Length: 381
Image 1: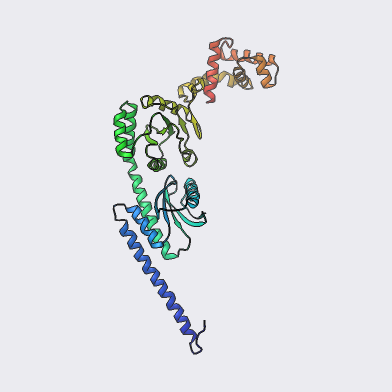
Image 2: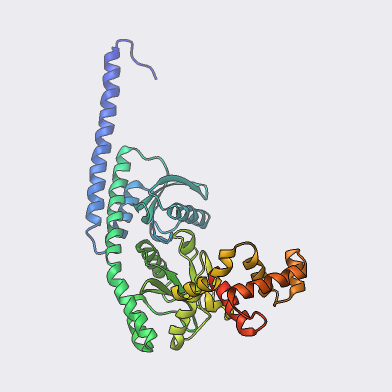
């Protein structure tokens, strides 16, 4: 463009400054108006969906709120192509798994999304995703308002989890007490339904609040397929027979899961015991009957008795305990044990005789072998 010759440079500078000021004033006015509209939307009966919808309208972009389980809780507009929704959900789940507050730009399905986690470190409640990256300072201020509202609303929802936990615990007590009809009636009114029989029972040690919030979000997206409740010092989950426990339980929260065999509600108490016995040190494990399961939950008394019985061997040291363990693992066969250890069978025989003398046990008898086998098993578990 051409500037007339008689136009002074000061006039050009002034025109640019006036245009920039007018633009900045318009954006500030828009931001104030948008924040007011979002705040008014938050006063409706459905505050969070209304606020998310108003933010989407003001920005002219897709806005999605993800819950603690990494699933979309609210989306406006609701139609996001599958090519974008699946990779976006995967990326958001990864941010939530990290457990630290963060913000990132994610590319999914040919579009860019700004994602901001909600909640404090170690207790993330979800994430807010906005399609597009062309946002100025005023737009970010409006988004910050919604982030604060959403975070507050999700924290408020977590405050109600204590009451929900007490109700869930009551339903579990009714189930284990044999009053399945009462438990079903409460569950139908509160959560939709209980998983259909037969069910699998999972036991998770501990009762971490962030895990509770995750399970609440997960159960809300799959009503009737999963139920959970606190029980003493652990969490009990009930699953449809063909349903697997949600993987984030042991990946994001580091909580091991023990699973029972499929069972009817009439035998729920026994199934909880099975699941408790199957709890591994990490990951997930399913109960299977066998003699090894007798030592999955070793009591302090058992451990003390095992240590006392094996103490003479451990005071002597050397390889006696190792050779005795190998001998029992090979069905008390000197030849097979010698082959496995790479030593002579006479050496094996001499070590077993010496171990029997130290332990004051007749290792040629079933009772003697059973006692030392049990002690070795308990001390190893």
